[in-house]
Image 1: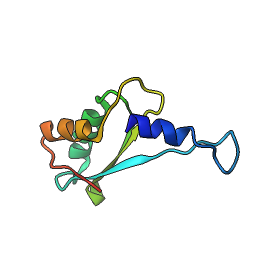
Image 2: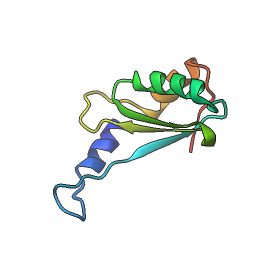
Image 3: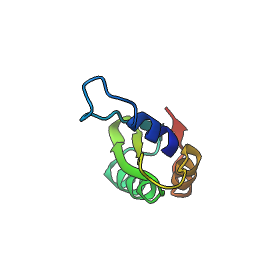
Image 4: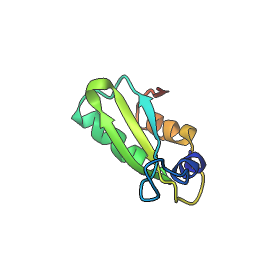
Length: 94
């Protein structure tokens, strides 16, 4: 995903060179259902090298992961899912 995020970020934007495209990975987690679980998900996912931002939506049982297009390394969806599973969450790409 870091490679994909980089490619998306470097795609010329139809609104001009000062705009940039971005892509988020959506993950569905049935146990993500309140502020406490949201805090755990956010902290765990933010610790994955190459993840720039994490947005959590407990009411929808969803998290969105934004991979840093300038990060060194190759963070993967599998790595994020593994880390979240270790934190006690069943994860499914959405």
